[in-house]
Figure 1 (cartoon, rainbow, N blue to C red):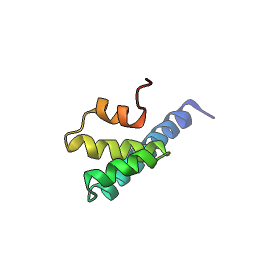
Figure 2 (figure 1 turned 90 degrees about the vertical axis):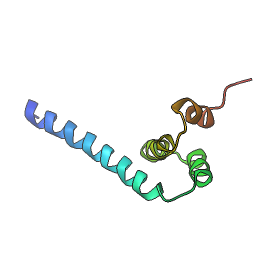
Figure 3 (figure 1 turned 60 degrees about the horizontal axis):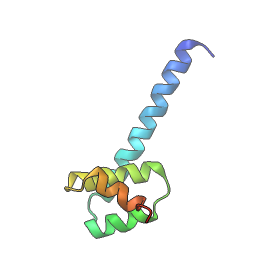
Length: 75
């Protein structure tokens, strides 16, 4: 595979990832914060997690709060 093919394929893969996250944001934007938090706790796909986190951050949640919800600190 040539250098140019590798370069353009990497761009397309990144664009696909961004498109999937944007679709998740669009689909989940009409849900309430409680519904989003519940979905975030159940989600396993990284694109879905990223999209839900973006929606919640736009509503005032911090990245730290969301990461603590996903991975509670050990006691």
